[in-house]
Image (cartoon, rainbow, N blue to C red; front, side, top):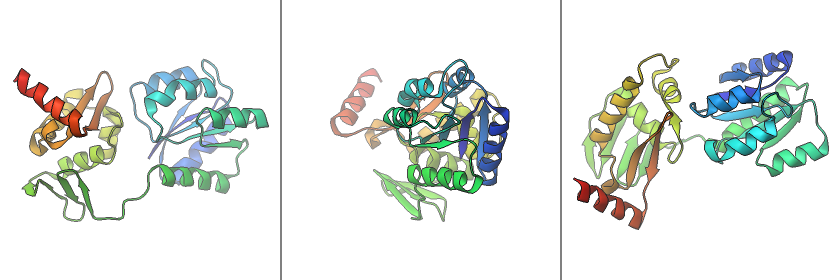
Length: 242
């Protein structure tokens, strides 16, 4: 998981980062809210840990401005030296999931982070996942579309599973690269685009199958699940423009 941390105090930032790394997650630290806001506009993270007070944008202002962009699923925790009841209430009312007072107690803080991640991203124990006409078998790394097997490479299968596990969520190119290839994104954006294009064709990710893989300007991609009349309308529109 990729966890973005906004913390103005370098010592607290260091401690929080260490706890996150010991949980085997990636910590993306920020010292001011403005730089975090700019980064989140083009990158995807799995959790936010915010400071109440920050230069540029406060944690509360950042939460309010980013909730619509990062979605309701992404957990948000506040970690601040200011633990006043009014601040806690305002943070939770604005959409935060938890609020802890600095300095943190390592074991407790780690447990809170782990609990929020489990709640937001429950582990998928089933080896087989069925979504509309798509059937994914994680053990065999195989996929069928309307019962027809489709041959995918290991990379293509991981890419497909990433999209179908995050329906409706914008995934940035650097997040896709980190989750599928397991390293920092340093390639041309065409590397991701070409893989996505081939995957769309291989799995026929089109309205006829009730899904659409949508590019998001200056960010990445989002897999949309089309329902009923919406899917039919999209299919007819595509047929009219063909």
